[in-house]
Amino acid sequence: MNRKLKIALIGSILLTILLVFVSRNTSMLRYGNRATCGGTNFSSRFASWHRTDADAVLIFRNTKQFRFPTEHWLQLQILNPATGEIEQDIEFPIRSNIRVVTLSENEDVIAITRGFGESADTLLFSLKMKNVPERLATIRGAERTVWHSSEQMLAAIYYPEEYEHGSNIIALYDVSGAEPVQTDTFRLKRIAISQILGWSNDGQVIAVSQYDKNGEIPYYIFVDSGRVEKSLYRESLHNCVADGQWSPNEPILSFSGQNEDTEGWDIFLETVASPNSKEWSLVNLTNTPREDEVNVVWSPDGNHLAYVKVYRDAADNLRQELFVLNPNDALPTPIQLTVTPDALVDSPWWISDTEIAYLTWSPAELIWSLNTVSLDEPEPKKIAEIPQLWYSEP
Image (cartoon, rainbow, N blue to C red):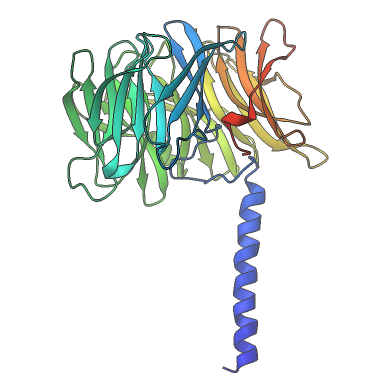
């Protein structure tokens, strides 16, 4: 093969790769560089929602703060989403490779995962004293922790010592005493677990997403028996999942799932019953070709689901809007709550049974804002602009 032919062949291959990359990214409507599978997270990474007792809080994580020359410190702001007021501004003297921050729902205890894989640790801090976090304990080899809904228990992806590949182990920890106690472990098939989708409201089932040869699907761990069941989602030949959340009233997991038939992400509801029960079912709640429904969250009373719909309008403009529907209706009808042609809606969370807080990103102004909207008075309100010190552009 002569030199010119080789150059033409290489150029053709590179052009093909570029076209595939571009087509793949233009079909992914969400702003920013999003992976289609493997721990997909459609929410902003600098902020996370939590609930302490009945009150919703928004935690901002500032990883830009540092202390010369090498020691990086973590700063958190805990904010009231209804008023925009900062309830706590906290500084933690720990290194900046922080991956997950989760706040317990019944006590002021925060779990911070540092590092990842076999080098991960989870650090527990008490926030009972304003702005003075008290270091309680460190759990070695635990990452992506999720709190039990009513007890001082944690579930985590667990890496025993000298574990050199992605973990297929979920460990449970009792953190009610002076030192955390590992109470149980569950081994799934020997493929890495991507994330813990949530702990059911009654504490009987833990949902996780695990890689397989075709993508990433949910599995369910029945805590008392240790039995592991595969989601019906795989039987429908779908690929990946994200945004798992359990209903507050029933053993129903909602999640956003990649749907090959519609070339987008749809909302799915899976009723998780005891193994071999006829009550087990999977419902595809939305079915919108080449559009994405993501960031799915239940209202506290379990009567509504809020989510972000990502699509292109009639003028081929990218839109990212807030929708809500009642999954209990015979024919659930989505209702659009926002119209933001100049901004992108992200990360909704219910702050009451009828009111939703959410973030918006303005590409023109390069600013994040906190907003609320009510089902009773559907006129969005801007609560506050997020200081640029706390984030980088998506």
